[in-house]
Length: 119
Image (cartoon, rainbow, N blue to C red; front, top):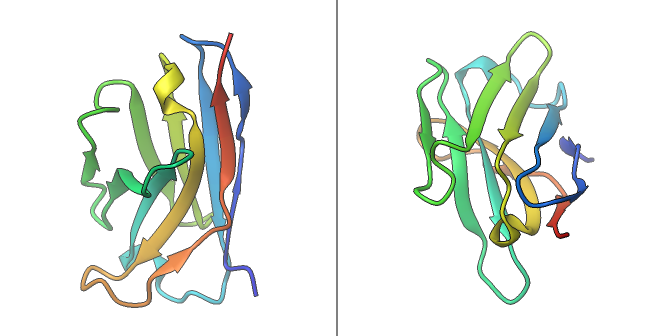
């Protein structure tokens, strides 16, 4: 069963913008209490943290995207978003949606969406 489904990836020129979306299935209860986040994996590299947002809407970002990316959530729609502005070549990666409890339990991943930044 696919519990997290990402969308919104694609090809964009440097300096452009994309908005990623992640829909979380009803199989994950009490989603409003979960931490939701985004990670990415570039070719030949390990998966890395991008951004996360807590149940109280506290957001955290990696230094590489701070000031350019914005994470948000809509618990009623069971969605988490990643607005990506001023995209750079080095942002090219597969982006994964993640959710887990504040204690780090019930960790769930999406299947990923490709973002390619190229002229």
